[in-house]
Structures are given as C-alpha cells and as structure tokens.
Amino acid sequence: MKTVILCGGLGTRLAEETQLRPKPMVEVGGRPILWHIMKIYERFGMNDFVLALGYKGEFIKDYFLNYHPRMSDLTIHLKSGQVDYNNPTAEDWRVSLIDTGANTMTGGRLLRLKLQLESGGTFMLTYGDGVADVDISALLAFHRSHGRLATVTAVRPVVRFGELTVNGGQVINFHEKPQAAEGWINGGFFVFEPEVFDFIEGDATLLEREPLEKMAQAGQLMAYHHPGYWQCMDTIRDRQALEDLWGTGKAPWQESNT
Image 1 (cartoon, helix red, strand yellow):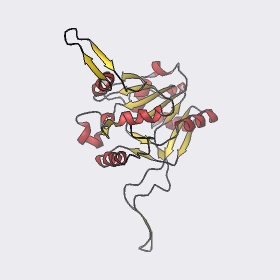
Image 2: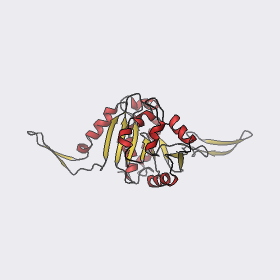
Image 3: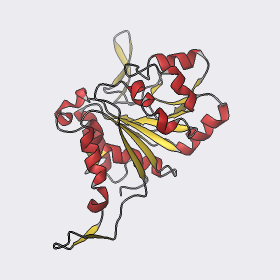
Image 4: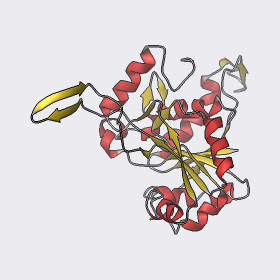
C-alpha cells in the first residue's frame, strides 16, 4: 500500500527555518521531520512512499539521492571512481519523489498523483509536518470496516496556553497546557479510496475544503478518533517541543529513538 506525504507547502509560519529548506526537512533530533513521519508508517509495515514535492523540492530529492551513501561506510577507488558501500543501515523504503508544482494546493497535489495511485486501490496520505502515536493498523482496519471512501484521523491537540475554568471571576480550575476537552480537529493520517479523485477539480483545490466537505455531505467521510499524542510543527516553539521530547529518549511517536 502506498503512503502519500504532502511535502510542497511554503511553511510560512516557520519562516525562520523554511527560508532555507522546505518544512519537511526541518530537523528534530538531527533528522528531518519527514523521516520521523515515514518511520511511523514503517512500524506498521508501510514502506512504499510517494512524496508530493513543491517548494524547494530539490532539497528533498538531494536528501534521498544521497541517503544510501550517508548511511553506509564507503570505500572509494580514486582512480576508477568506483565506490563500494559497506554495512548500509538505510531503511528498506521505496520512495517516489514527484514534483507537484510550486503553488499547487493540497488537493491539487493529490490530483497530480492520480496516475501513480488510482490503480493501486486503498492508499494513505498525511501532511509533512505532523507526528503522532497513532496505530496505523487500527486506522486501516477502521477504514475497511465502514466501507466509505475516506477516513480522517481526528485528534485533540494540547492547547497552547493554560486553560481556566472561571465562575463569577473566580478561577475554579487551572490546567497548564491540557489536551483540548472538546473540538476534534483534522490531524491528517488519512486513508483514501481512488474514487476521491472525482472530488478534486484541479491545482487550486484545497483538499480540506470542497473535496472533504463534499465527501462529508455524501456520507463518504468517516473519522478515526485518536485521543493519544499528536503534534503539528507549525512554529519554532512547536519544533523545540518536539526536539525536547526526542531528547528524553521517549518520544511518543516512536518506539525508540533510532
């Protein structure tokens, strides 16, 4: 099964980092967040990735073109130019890097992958900036159980500031950065059937607008509720929070920091 990762956005809210590289290449623990996302899927046997590139996509191409040498010991025969790769530790992934346009919207990026995806049946899709401890196998089982065209993972993020319960000016309860008690949001980690392409018009289509709205109206969109850990890397503060978690050796989106 193929897993699509949307990697083409401008990442303007993380401009301190994305002026130099695309958002999926911003590092957490010395690895691009894109790598962390791919490792989540790998844990559940998913190793066939399609990366929808756009803004500064050449950085992502260069990263994967040089990944095998970077993860190997090298013996270089200077006269012939031959290189022997020894003890490679690279993951067993198939990675397709597809240019989907610099200014294409999320739905348009998916539509541009139609030829790569429509004949392969069910596929997964997520954003190139969010990690979670979501159970991908359970997500897929849920999708197959309901028989609809699309499943979105619904999450409840940690609120950015402390939450107050106030009665008549008196603070009854104070919770420092709790998980939102209400209001599930789109956390990515979608599962789609190929018929979703019928809901996308072109490059200017936002996946989160007309396609998902129309699928919901048609009763073809279901939500897999994930009450566990989820974090989107939108700001420098978010990146630092992920970095701090990784530094503990107990990052919730991975079984072990490898």
